[in-house]
Image (tube, rainbow, N blue to C red):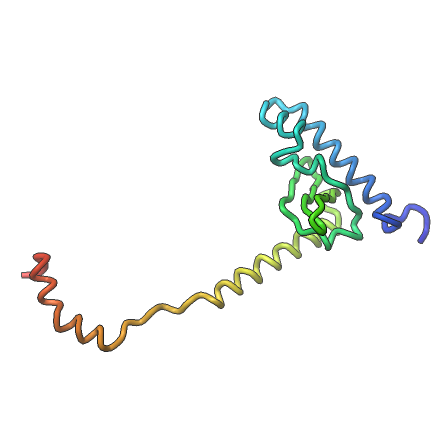
Length: 149
């Protein structure tokens, strides 16, 4: 591949871009006016658990089993795992890779919803035996609970 490619090796320029966006987000969080946000960013916990993750390039993006997407100042960071190891990918929110990834997530959610809907049990109908029993005994229930005249 030619110079400036982002597909070389383990992501090339994509990894450097992800690392710089991660550092930008962490710096902004560490300078936050909220003590909890500062603490989480410094400890690498909460929304900033990606602080201890490894950056991957766009060639590994489809392999990420994502846990969360963090968007800030026009940048998107996808925090997840590949093979049990914590990884992340970051880029501008309007980058084709990010848009494609989000569309894939939406498609998976839609498919899951359809699968759940398809496996839901239909409304349970009462049996004719129960219906006849209820019709015979309804007046007794009404009398017992003082319903009707």
